[in-house]
Length: 54
Image (tube, rainbow, N blue to C red):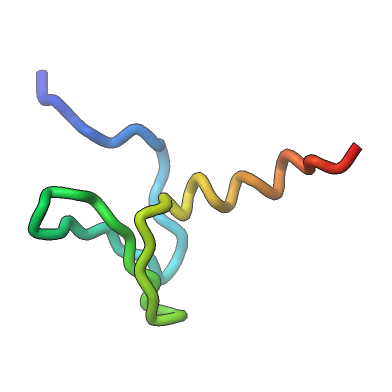
């Protein structure tokens, strides 16, 4: 079988693209807001499902 490195299922949110830098580190490009982040937007968007307020 093929060794897939993806840990998060599903596609990236609209406007996002996954890239890899010169060090082989995966980062994500938000084309809508013109910014980049090393945090998977799919993980970030799931935070809203788990409110931390008591």
